[in-house]
Each structure stands twice: as C-alpha cells, then as structure tokens.
Length: 161
Length: 185
Image 1 (cartoon, chains in turn red, cyan):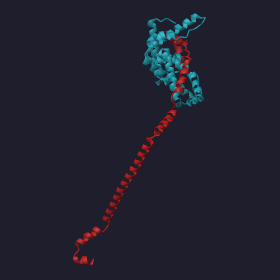
Image 2 (cartoon, each protein chain N blue to C red; image 1 turned 90 degrees about the vertical axis):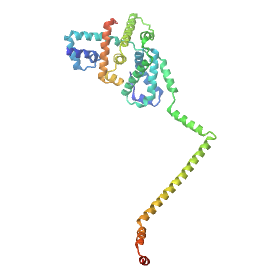
Image 3 (cartoon, chains in turn orange, red; image 1 turned 135 degrees about the horizontal axis):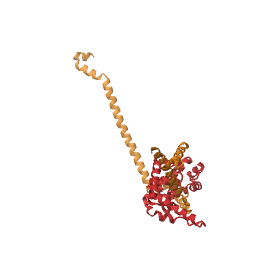
Image 4 (tube, chains in turn purple, red; image 1 turned 30 degrees about the horizontal axis):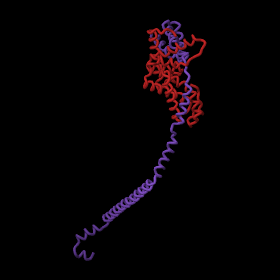
C-alpha cells in the first residue's frame, strides 16, 4: 500500500511530466504491469490531465500591441533628457534679471561673515594660547620660590642678597 | 519562448529599438498566452503584455546571459498577470470571454474545429477549478512546457513546492471531473 501511494504520487508528478530519471521510470513501469489500481490512475491521468492540454489553442498576439508598446517606449522620458532639463531649468532660474545679482550679493555677505567669524575665532585662540603660555612660564619659573623665600628672609639677608 | 542571443540583449539594453523588437517577437507569445490564461480576458492580457515589455525595456541593463533573461521574462509575466487578475477579478466571465476572442476560423474540417473548441473550453474549466497557485503551476507546466526547475525559478519557490502544487491540482481535477462527469472531450 505504501508502495502504491508513492507510485501514485510519482504518477501525478514526475512520471507524468517526464521529470523522473530512467531508473525511477523503469520501477514505475514495472509496478504498473502488476497493479491494476495504479494502472487505472495512470490511464486516467493521461486521458484527463495530459491529452486536454496537448492540443490546447495557442493564441496569436494581436498585431497592434507592438505599435502601442513601441510608441510608449519612444515617448517615455529619457533619464539623460531629465538631467538636461534640470540643467536648463537651473540656468533659466539664474538668468532671471534680479535674482542673479541678489544671490551673488548673498554669497558675498556669507563669505565676508565667514571671514569675520574666522578672525574672531583665531583671536580667541591666540589669546588662549598666550594665557596658557604665561601660566606655564609662571609655574616653571623660580619667581614664586623667590618671593616665598624673600618673605622668610631677614632684613640683612635681603640687603646682601 | 524562442532563443535570444546575447548580442541582441546588449543592443536592446543600449536602447536599440530594433533589437528590443526581436526580443518582443521571441517572448510575446509566451507572455500573451500566460496573461490570457491567468486573466481570462483579452483586453487584460493585452494590458499585461504591454506592462511586461515596458518593465523589460526599463530594466534590461541589469541582465546578462540568456537563461536568466528567460526566467526573468517568465517571472515578470506571471507576476504582472496575477496582480492584474487580482485587481480586476474578471474571472467571473471566464467562459464567455474566452470564447469571444477565439479567432473566427475557416476550416473545412468542422468536426475537428468543434472538438478543438470543446477541448479549449474544457481546459478553461479545468483551470478555473484551481486556486491561483495551482493554476499558475499547471499553466506553466502543461501549457507552456516549463520544467520543474524553471517553474521553481520563475515563481521563486522550492522545487518540491512545485511538485506539491501540481499534485494537489491534478488530484483536484480528477476528483472534480469524476463528480461532475465532464465526459471526455
């Protein structure tokens, strides 16, 4: 029974569709010789699942279809022309009489503002660097030590030293 | 789907419309028929086909090598068709609309034509009885002839999932046909 089930599954798939390899096909053919139930299924399958489809009508493609497709292809926007259109639009916008000078002025203002801002930042940085330098000098020198030692000296020591 | 050379793909990716037309000619039959089977509607199938090729045109540069292009075409076609079908839900009129766009035939062998139309209607009914996942697998396997591996790559599922969906679809078809007694075509 289990063998028949497997054979029937194969009859409905690989055997019917000629996807079964030679050894499997040979086994099925041999089984069909001795099993009327499976043989009946194979006959039913051929009659109802193979023959109806073998001579089914293949419809001609309507002739006007290519014309329609070709027209759509030739009229669809080209990616290159899209870029060209973009450039043209850009040029048109900036060729407007008052817009170009206004934008040029804006660019100059931004540049000048940027330069001024840069100078401010540079000055602040310079000041900071100087301060740090002075502090480092201050800490590394003997000035503190001298002042401290001077505070502890007597008046005679101060006179001679 | 017909073979497409690497040169054609490269030229099409560079914007050569004549090269892209060659890709269209190689792939359009597959795309249109899959779209028709999934949407059940001629107008929807045309829209899906347009969408698939416009997507292909815009993203062709990303692909190298024929095999990946084929799988990608399959994938885009199936996904677009499924999304469209979900959006429009036009499956209710499937039988009627499917008949309407069968091209009028002038054929001496009327019986054969009638048989063929009956067979087409039967296929339509078979597919209509399946859920979306099962139907897609059956279309790709039984009608478009894709291998299990190609179906797995197209739908981005495991190959055993392909087997499982096909098996369940076929069990359902057999059970339905026994119950409804469609009779043989």
